[in-house]
Length: 129
Image (cartoon, rainbow, N blue to C red; front, side):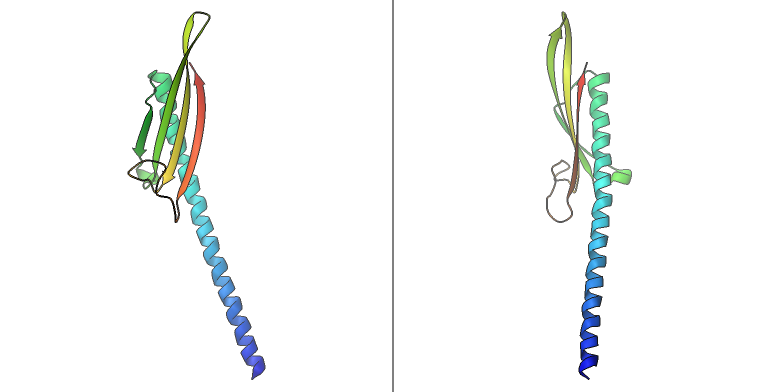
């Protein structure tokens, strides 16, 4: 009888450990996928910021964009600063672009609502034109 109770306790503890391990692994996998999606959101924002700086010659300050499609639920905030300088009597600008992708966003902007399963990725580029 004592052996049977001991075996039941050991099997119950082992079952609880396996359930806990499976839950932890599933949560980790979900956060990994969300992190990759946040990176893609930041990358899309970076491309948009580089386009604005190089094609339009404009630096928009700070712009927040809510994303759709495969990145629904994510937002990207792009910050751009331009620093003018003159070299050999030619005017140039140095653009610093910082793109932050996050989920869930707070009012459509990053940083978002922190806590729970909040993910954020940030990319930065410096351009000379």
